[in-house]
Length: 192
Image 1 (cartoon, rainbow, N blue to C red):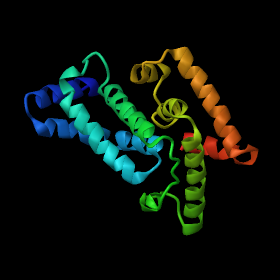
Image 2 (tube, one colour):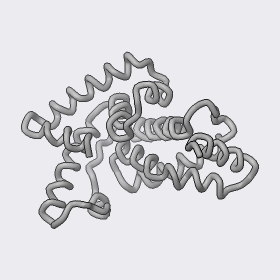
Image 3 (tube, helix red, strand yellow):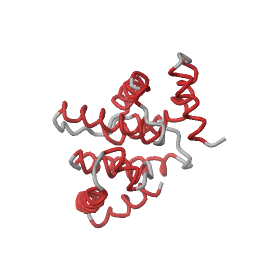
Image 4 (cartoon, rainbow, N blue to C red):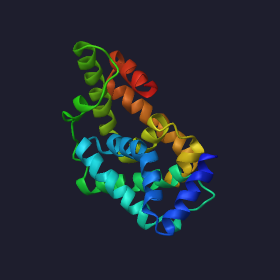
């Protein structure tokens, strides 16, 4: 069965009061929503709280879902708007990564490699947190969620030319923040 058809079925069931159907949608997109929130907010605890709120908002607004769009695009649009609101409220109080990255499972063997990988992720995440929120959003959607320009356009409401310009500028800002010797970190993180 086509994923979009299956999801529309779950949406219809959820609108008729079937909470388990919405649970299927949550299960399918929990990782993507958490990842978006984590990359935008830079903090595991905030990302968990944001994920819950994003799904709550999606559930209460489910009737407004446009069946011609992908559910994931609609959901990430709600998520990106919520994260931007949270960032605006905290007025760019830059956060560093806490110990939550250590709790994440790692496929890399050994403590040395794990520590280096954590350090690498932390530097990229810190550089990402220094980006203005409008640049950070398109960067996260493009490089961590692999959305096309068209999908980013639907999520953000921005024209494709603006998205491309922001991505170009964000790459330059990240390169400057990471420095020439650490530029490979950005390349490693976006392909990981």
